[in-house]
Each structure stands twice: as C-alpha cells, then as structure tokens.
Image (cartoon, rainbow, N blue to C red; front, side, top):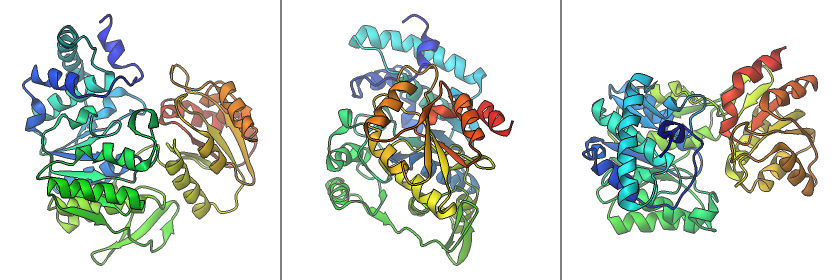
Length: 413
C-alpha cells in the first residue's frame, strides 16, 4: 500500500460498510477489544460532548479512561486518549507500523484495503488494552450496525444521542431507517440510555431494546436554572451545577451522561464533578472576544447553535463564516443561519479533497437567495470578518479548527 502512514493520516473516506476488514485486523492482533470495557456512544449530534462529560465523571471516580473519538481537531493523536492525554508519537508510530503490516495481509485475504477509520479503530483497541484502561468511551464513526467500532461483542452501556438525518446515502432516507442502523450498537446484556426523541425514533429504540431484552433508560432533560456567559446552570441531587460545556443544547448531553453514569454505578460526587469540569473544544467555543467557533454541520447542530446565539446574544448582528464538505446537503443549514442582520463569508478547508470549494458554496447559497463573500481559507475569512466590526461565528465543519490559532491572530490584529 505505498506510504501507509500517509494513508492512515489522510482525510477519511467512506468505503463499503462492513465488519469484515476490522474483524480480520483485530483477529491478527489477538482481539484486544475483548479486554476493553466499552461505553458505546452513537447518534447524530452530541456524541463527542457526551463522551467529554462521561470522561470527566469516570476520571473523577478514579477510573483509567480510554476515549476514541473522531475527527481530530489539530493532531491525529487526539483521536486516542487515556485520561485526557493524546497517544504520544512514541506509542502511535509502532502501533501504526503493526497495523500497516496486518492491513497488507487483510488486503491479500479479502481483496479490500481497510479504511482509515478501521486503521485507527484497530490501533485504539490495542492501545487501550495495553494501557489497562478500566473504561473505554467508544464514539461511533458513522451509523452503528456496520461501523468499525461495533466489532465489540459486548459493552457496558449503549448511549444514543439525538438522531437526525445524516449520511443518508449510507444510512437511509428517513430518521427511522437511520435509527435502526444506529441501534445496531445495542447488545444483549447491555443497558441502553437515550433521550426523548421523535416518536418514530423512540419506537425504533424501544423495539430494539425489547428485542435484546435489555433495560432502556430515557434521560430527563433538566430545566435550566440560569446561565453565566454561555454556560447553563442545572440542579442535580440538590446541588446547583454550572455545565462545563457551553450552550442550552448541552443540557441534553449532560442529562444523557448523568443517566449513563448512574447506570454504570458512579457516585453523585463524581457525576457532579464531571458536569462542571467537562471540556470539549470547538463546540460553541469562544476563541476571542466576539469570535465563536462551533462544529455544527447539519440541521440539528445548526438549530442548536442558533438557539444558543439567540439565548446569549439576542438580536445581535453577526457574520457567519461557513465551510462544508461537498457530500453534505447544506442548504437547510444555511437557511437556518440566514436570519435578519446576518452576513456570510464562504470559505473552504484547505487541503481536504472532500471540502466544497468556496466559490461553489457561494453559488449554491446564491441559488437559495443567500448572498455572501468568499475567501480561500479560514484566516482570510476571519480577516474579512474583523473589518466588519461585528461578532462572527465560524461553523459548518470541524475540519476548519486546524487553522484556528492563525485565524485568531488575524481577528486580533
């Protein structure tokens, strides 16, 4: 396979979904996933935030916590962490060397090359098993049933965040079809935790839980009891807690994490600590005064972003800096963002072959009556926005975060 490490670190592509390649990879390394006690987190939006809350809770309870998430923001090492520390190059490089050799064998056996996500999933399981993790937070990459993470045979809990239309070409054209795919992470003997969803989605989750004979917990979203800046306050066990992650939508993610932590038997003190101390960059993150980054990239995420902006900055004019992947249906999101007093700057993720070009994005928006400027990269876009002397929000793709540091300098110039 040419330069394997370049392949493993390139932008993820989607190939035919199945568990054959990842199963073969892990068989060759002694099935390390069987030594991992996994909390499997699936859904459409909020997976990373739920993992962040749970990580803080489990660590407060004294557990050694592995966490596998994607995509990374700045360095690929961020995808695999133990107690919040990304895997060091000294451990990652030999891991990838070993996975690379096994990938060549899988290609010979099956005639298919494991995907980048499968490569990283195999490496993650090996690392977590070698590190002796007490708990592994496993974020589904796409879907559930045939996602590489679903190679595990059992799990400590399955958590399903809010389910919406996403990756329809691979997962289905209705929320019910997508829910069935995502419910593939529900296993016999594994408690399930979710929130109140669309009726059709609720029915699918309940049906799958009943089929597997496992308990289903529907987390109750707490009412906010005020906010400070962009952080909400909630009450839990008679205590007033300030959510460590910003935005009203984090109440739902916190509720899911609390319910999952209770299912896992965590004590109230650890749960409270986790709610207040969770950290998750690029989600409603203030980068500088007047400049916010949010990873919203689908209608559900954009709706949450809009609700947050209206709650914390009501009636403010603002600039929207937007980029997206070419395989996304972004017009619904752009329409939601196109409120009164908005201006747009369309940009792209430089070096990502999946990214929609800024001129194509601008033309697509124009077809829906949404006008705006274009910029060749995030830093240029932020420079343009700074001259407008109004608040700006960057959204549309988490991949934009890689050049945030340079963009912030441009904003502050």
